Amino acid sequence: MATAFDDPYYSLDDGLAETAHVFLVGNDLPARFGGDFQIAELGFGTGLNLLVTWAAWDKAGCPGHLRFTSFEAFPMQLDDMREALRHFPQVGALAEILLSEWTPQKEQITLSNGPTLHVIRGDARKTVPAWEGKADAWFLDGFSPAKNPELWEPDLLQAVATHTKPGGTAATYSAAGHVRQSLASAGFDVTRTVGFGRKRHMTRARMPDAE
Image (cartoon, rainbow, N blue to C red; front, side):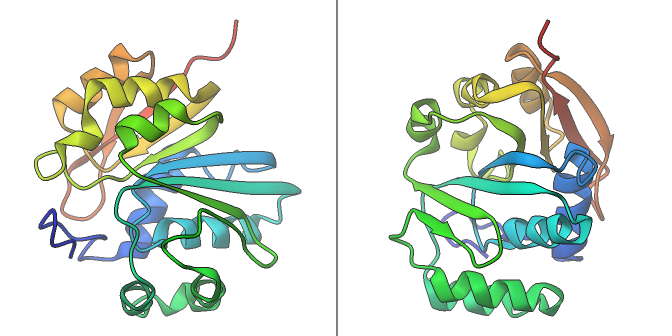
């Protein structure tokens, strides 16, 4: 539980399955993996999304390199992250690699035989617009819009769109109408689909291909 937002970091049903359903399937992954593939994320939290994605990349046996950039205002302390990830032994080996390198102050980490992780600290409303990269896929994983409205503001979602490659995608567990409207206004084609667990719906979004 993130005390600042009174919201859990992951599904209380099954955090691994939630990540796979919302962020992998929601972005048509691992089918799109390959080459120099860039994922960007709002909210690094425990790092669980990274670990599930890393495991899927390895299982797919894709050529190329995975880059994972996360925008996080409040990076977790090592002991807190270790305790949270203890509940997911399925990715335990990868978690140990992450934990061996993790400090909240370190922004870029090249994980052993794994992706390049870049955690950009600070207010995403400032750091996303300043980012020089563009993502193939976005994981919009801030705390719920009711608890953490700053990560769902129209201007930030417009910045997400600006930093998405043509044909790139975004996915979120949230199906809030104002979130879908902001994504659509930013230029995404937006679809409400079946959610995970107790959530009836989620949101998938795709940027049109280049003309």
